[in-house]
Image 1 (cartoon, rainbow, N blue to C red):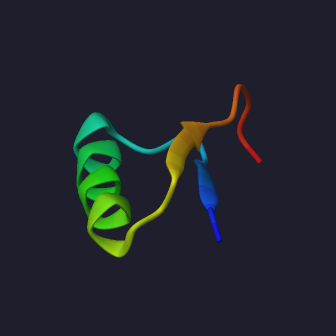
Image 2: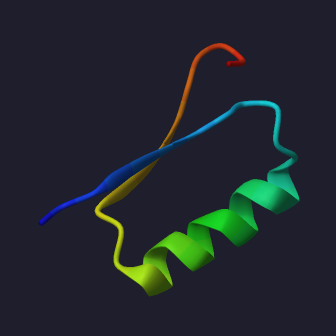
Length: 38
């Protein structure tokens, strides 16, 4: 099963980087960002 994750754009660049590394280690298919805050 392929799972994508969508992140809220209010995160800092450091948080995006950290979350991307974690998602990669967990095997997520893609990490995307929304165009607007949720």
